[in-house]
Every structure is written in structure tokens, then in C-alpha cells.
Image (cartoon, chains in turn purple, green):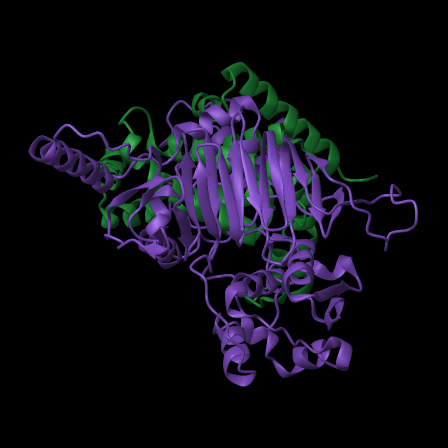
Length: 455
Length: 185
């Protein structure tokens, strides 16, 4: 093989670019076509000319075969699918902007689980404070200074210390039994004794070392800089070293330096630990063989330590079926979580006949992501509330309502999809739907692989 | 500033139009990149959306230094890496490779004879199976250098490794693929 001295000369010797072009099928049959578009060679060589040269020159043929074998790998690749339409991204942006707590929404939980090297890099793309918020902050600060100058006078009042700052909207702040007015787009100071009631998931920081993400309808009483009471709902906690405790009506959790969640929606204390350890005090029972008289016995133990990967459910400490805290991150819920949630909150049991079937590809149309909700609301008269976390592409309830799939899901009483979703637990319906339609992180319909039983 | 940087400057200023233009320009390359890495269309779409949401949020901190595409690929790579760490490496590394695409191809007429369609599908699966044998590190370099045509220097920046390592990994990836794809006697 020799190099061409003048690429524009059709009579020149054939070079590597010509062979590459031939291997890629980019050479024209017509000598006038040229290859400038492909950018591979500017010569006017045709496919026939190169083929003739290959037939005549074994060395050239050998070189071509090597190139062809090299390129074959890439040439065989199926085309990658196109990027999703911008409308989907725009919808996500709009939803984020419409969520009052969007600015405080934490980055994906998984960022926290990274190894050191990647964590630093991820921090580099962390969302900074938006300009509007900064401007608000500046305006608020200026107003506060001005008000301070105008109104300041020596006082002996001992105002409770500020413990946290929460957004003006999205979180209802209850002080001494009365809901404080919620100024839009302003931040409010939280003091000991205040109760935070979240209509939507929101994040709060206490004393700058305790990060709390409250789920919808969670009620949290702030007892002090290092103590809260979860009155309802569930919350996720990340605590830097130092004392901190979470009390509930069903027991308390003392932090030993950790990230964990507390859930009291089922009328019981549920604690999941992502990393670190907590000590829970409640009516507890050790599982995994520690209960001497069988699994059904409930033995009162004053406290138990729950460590990474463990979960306290119904008075038992055992391996967590799913990672703690995934509910507030990007929703990639597993069937196991849906099952646990349903069982814990609604006393439903989700039975998977064949776990390997959970990745069945999506079938049928998906015109309306709200179809399932509408069905539950209209047909069954159940109070279903849509959550802001709902993603536009997740719910494809129309699939479930397809006659064929309905038969699959409901051939008998045990497979009848009858899900009661009380208003405070609307998110459970979301879990169910996501688990149904998005097992293993991809669209899917479980059909006969899953059934819902009421027990 | 080049055209991409001007676009990014618009995004930094909160211009949704500029963001849409940026997505129009880089959405497909990022999607393709992530799809080649994870082999799952749905996951790749989700990751692509995540990447651009991160871009939107992080735009205020962007500085016109270096190529925008490099920055985007860096974010995409980190996000894929993070997701893999979250789910377990295997879950996001070509767990169910291209089955859907291949089946779609097989059912798409397109004027191609059935035997040729089947052959293409089989070839795609063979290549995919070969790619699935690569370690994530090799795959990352292979996808960037060989499939996306990113320069060694840029790849080094994206993958956060020296240029020499990029070259050696690209060669190792190719050698591994060639070994797997070698016709059986």
C-alpha cells in the first residue's frame, strides 16, 4: 500500500482512506459523486476501482481485510435510539419549578453513597442557589436590617433560638396550635415547639448538621436543635456526628451517627438505616432465630440497634428488603419496596409468583398515565391523590386497564386488583403503580407474575 | 466563546430557549453515549434527562473553559457511574443489551430481505455480547474513542485518566472485542 501524492488524482495509488471508505461502504458507484461529505477521501475513486485494485494486489487486499475486520465491529452496531423529546425535560423542569421545595430538593441520594473520588466531582455539578433565590435572600436581608434599625430597642425578652429556616410555602408551620400564615416565596424561622407539616416532600436542616427530608403529609415537631418528634408520616435523616433523637408515638430512635428513615404511617415504628447505626426503643422483637419461641411471638425488648442495611418493621429487626431512603430520591422503586409499603401501610400483601418476570417489556398503549388513578377514583370511588413526584413517563395505567391484561390480573379473587388508598397514603398508590409499571427500573407489566391480595 | 459556549452562556442566564437549543445539539450524543454504556434504552433516556437537569441546575457555576461537549460527557459519565454504584455495577452495565432494538429491527421491513434482517440482528447481538464482556473502564474509553469519535485528550479529561491510559485501554478494548468476535473455525 502506498500513500497518494495527490488525493484529487483518480489515477493515484490507493491509500488507507480509500480502503476505509470502501470498508464503510462509503465509496460511490458513480465516479462523479465524490466523498467530500464523508470526509474520508477526496479522490474520485469508485467502489469498482477499489475492488479491482484489491483483486489485483494481494498486499492491498490484506490491508483492506485488516481494516474491514477492524471496522466491522462498529459497523454492526445497531443505531442508538434518539434522545427523548425536549418536552419531557421541560415538563420535569416545570414540575421542579412548581414544587415549592424544589430549591431545597437534595441531589440524588446515590451521590451520597459514592466513593470519595466521584463524590467530589458530583459536588461540582451540584445545583447552586438560583439567582432568584439569591436575590430574595439579599432583599430579605436588606429588609431585615432595615427593620432591625427601625424597630430595635433593648429588650429583656428571651425569644426562643432559631433552629431552622424553612420555605414560606410547601411547609405549614404550626406554632402553639395555630398555623402561621404562609408568605409565598419567603423563608420562616423555626423555633422549638414548632410543628412542620409538609404537603409535599421538603427538606429542612436543623443546626446545619441534621438534614431532614419530610415526605408528603409528614408532621414533625421540632423539640430542639437535636431532637424532633415525628408525629405522622415518614422522614429521612442524615446526621453528622453528634447527639440527635427522633421520637414517635411508637418509640424513639437515638442516632449513633447515620443516615436513616423513620416511618410511622402504619401505626408502628419503622426504621431503615442506610449507613451507620441507630438505637430504637419500642416494643421490639429480634427475628432471625433470636426469638426463642418462634417468629410469631412478640417479645418486648426495650431497645435494639439497627445497623446499615437493616430495617425495623413491626417490632422486628432484620435485613432490609430495599435500601432505606430511596423513596425521597429519584423514584426507582422496586417491587419489594412496593410490597413492603403496601403491607406496612395498607395491610395488603403483594405476592410475586415469578420474580424473573418482573422485566417483561411494556405492552399495549399508554395514552394516559392517569388512567389508573381515574379508575380507582371514578370506578371504585377511592380517594386517590396525585403526588407532585409523579413523573410524566412512569404511569401507564391504560395498560393495566387493557381487557387482556385485566384478565391476566384478575382471573380470580386472589388476583383482583383492589387497592384501597386512603387519602393520607396517596404515595402508596404511586409506589404500587411504579412497581407495577416500572419494575427493575424499566417499563413493564407484571401481569400474572404479580398479584395483590388483601389479608 | 465558540457557539456551544454561547449557548451554554444563555443557559447560565436562565434562557430556556438556549437550553432547548443545547439539548437539541447535545441530547442525542449524550443519549447515544449513555445507551452505549448501559445498553438499556429506558435507563439511557432517564439518565439523559437527569444529565440535562443537572446541567440546568449547575449552569450558574459553568465557566467558559474547555469544550461544552467535554463538560456534558463528564456529567453523563459521572451520572452513569453513580447510577451503577447505586444499583450495583452489573445492573447498569449492559444488563439487557439491545434486545428491544434488535427485535425492533427484526420486525421492521425497510425493504430488507428477512434473511438479511435476521443476520443483522444476530450480528448486533454478537457485538453487544462482546461489548458486554468489557469492563466498565474499558467500555467507557471504547465508547468515547471508537464509537463517539472523541479525541484521546478529551477522553482523558472525561474519564479522568492520562492520555496514555486512554490509548492503552482503547487498544485493550479492541483486542478483547476482536478476540470475542473472531469467527469460530
